[in-house]
Image 1 (cartoon, rainbow, N blue to C red):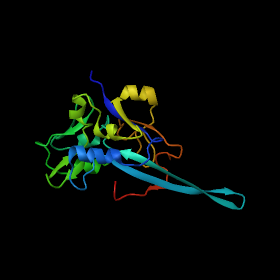
Image 2: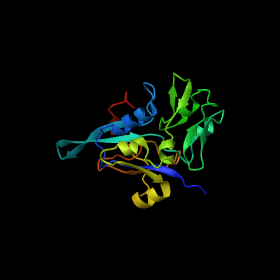
Image 3: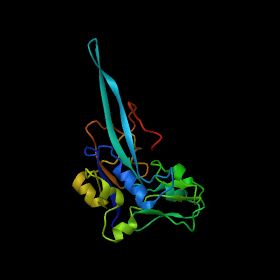
Image 4: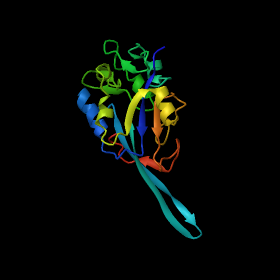
Length: 205
């Protein structure tokens, strides 16, 4: 049985530099507007009420997002041509020869991982840098992170080492697709579904 691969993200170390996003874009030479990895700036807050005193309780953190190569990959389920498929190691990839650019995968993915490339008329997405891994290298995003907030490997080993948290705001409930992702949340991280925060750089993600 093949080992299932996944990502680890230590949100406590991420400073929002977007080096992972830039490295991914540079390595894959994606078109303008096509970003396989994106960094969200997430912030918000509430009021802490003590008697007649209202004090702001604000927070801000960063979240790097890419394909999580989910166990229940809905992008694979909805693809009418089987172009979107999952390999034995769990990595979800697109077969360019079969893709017709219908965008069903894009619309169904709660992480917005599949990206439509208008130049080719086909879908594209993170493949966990298959060529780099086959050469014994780390994925571009992992290698580029200056604070070592990203890692990758067999998901069972990542969960054994770091825990099993896979969902924080603004990500969807992990029960929807069972992502191969482990997160070490920032101390100000909000739970999935929390309504006190918002993505403050929506045009970038």
